[in-house]
Amino acid sequence: MEGSDSYLIRPNYQHKFKPAVVKECIREIVRERLSGVQYDPEQVSELSRSLADCIKDKVKSAGFDRYKLVVQVVIGEQRGQGVKMSSRCFWDADTDNYAEDLFMNLVLPGGSFWKLLLLKMRGWITDVSGEKQ
Image: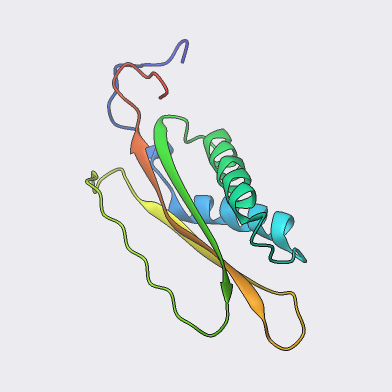
């Protein structure tokens, strides 16, 4: 943060959270890392964690380093049932936003496939001192 105004509590217009840019980052990573991958319930936990870390690093390197990012990755096998999820938080409508993506990968014959839901990736501004938590 050297040389920058760490006392600023709101991003300027050029650094405002841009959902379209973030969604493209998510899509690129997911397509690259999951195309052709088979669903393995034993590996889902580690895969979810590594995807979330990779997405967070890529988004921060895209110029959103003054934001706190919450990345939620949910991976599950889809066998015809539905899934509904929700989350709530307080945020500043002028600066905070989210990006989401859905990835479905047909990997087994007979229509069995698995789904990756990337839900509610939100950005929050870092604290006034600029320290990362």
